[in-house]
Image (cartoon, rainbow, N blue to C red; front, side, top):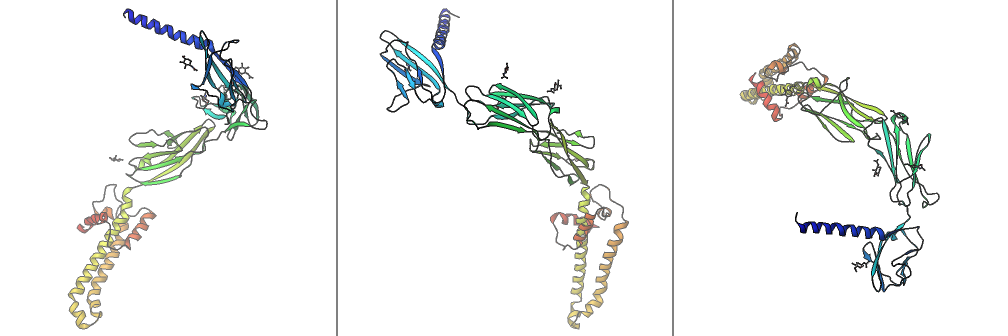
Length: 417
Ligand SMILES: *[C@@H]1O[C@H](CO)[C@@H](O)[C@H](O)[C@H]1NC(C)=O
Ligand SMILES: *[C@@H]1O[C@H](CO)[C@@H](O)[C@H](O)[C@H]1NC(C)=O
Ligand SMILES: *[C@@H]1O[C@H](CO)[C@@H](O)[C@H](O)[C@H]1NC(C)=O
Ligand SMILES: *[C@@H]1O[C@H](CO)[C@@H](O)[C@H](O)[C@H]1NC(C)=O
Ligand SMILES: *[C@@H]1O[C@H](CO)[C@@H](O)[C@H](O)[C@H]1NC(C)=O
């Protein structure tokens, strides 16, 4: 560090201190009520300046004709009918014959904000306590705030713009309302400035039943809107209510009011009860969701039976068509359907009866299928395990031969058989 730097630093230090002390010494604070007339002094008493200039918040003040502001000969600024907008920092230069001086005046105007106080709950780490926060900024002078609760006496009162009230959870109940009221000289009689908070137990809502197929994913949804203060909402599993953590199996999403639990690659073990558990300082409430998981294969069974039947019908139609074709001369010559019915009827009814017979007999006799994908006919003719499968089978039986791409692929297996 060379000498020049030291000198520069010293100089800087000195000027900063000088500026600070001058500001300190010359600033005065003036407080007025709305409607008052105030006088802001510029020059020392008893002198008449050559000139005096005023700025308010950095902008020079002008004095147009009919103004509430007037400048006196001794440099004093008069403001009549003061309004809250007149509040600010006023600076003045007083130029005297041999020297000049500055004056700084902070003008405050008593006022109350147009708003009501603001009531909120302070987020608190201790779940056994509630901290109510009432604030009402901008009132001059400071207001008196008080908290009162239904069924109990007013708890606190003080002269402040922010007031906290701490209550133990055991003192609180569902539906309880705490009200904060502000008092101030400038609040008109009969006018009330207040805010309130009403505490509510959580109430998670959602569908109580869910069902899905093995291998798929399912999302369970829970909505928590009632709770005040905001609840801590978690998903839990089983009667032991083990906390579900996100991972390869579970995805948790939503930050309220909706909370989703997505179970990936559902298996039979995932079947059971799940709980959406919501807790705030008033208590705990749960939504119970019962999840049913169906074997994925059972869903295919109906479609597969449908395809099987469709293929058989298609085959029958083909045989009939072939017969009609080969007997066409007879039909034409004999001029009637009688001949065809005699020859072809046997075949036709044989196929049909065979078909039905096979279907009715074969189904109950075959053993239930394993959990493997269908590769043999045994699995395809699995005994339908549920009502839904029966419905599907019936639906499928009446289906026309046209089917989806996926189903035709399955049909290839059957044709092989
Ligand atoms: C007062 O005078 C100084 C220097 O003469 C000038 O920089 C400053 O802006 C003046 N202030 C007002 C309020 O006129
Ligand atoms: C109370 O509320 C006011 C306004 O929202 C905020 O500025 C203040 O920090 C709060 N007090 C506490 C203790 O949280
Ligand atoms: C306001 O609170 C202060 C301490 O924070 C206390 O000394 C004073 O007595 C209280 N005034 C009223 C009116 O409660
Ligand atoms: C709140 O609970 C604490 C202990 O948990 C106790 O010391 C305190 O007195 C209680 N306050 C009230 C107002 O009941
Ligand atoms: C789904 O779970 C089964 C066992 O339950 C496992 O064999 C399979 O690899 C899983 N699939 C995926 C995509 O995680």
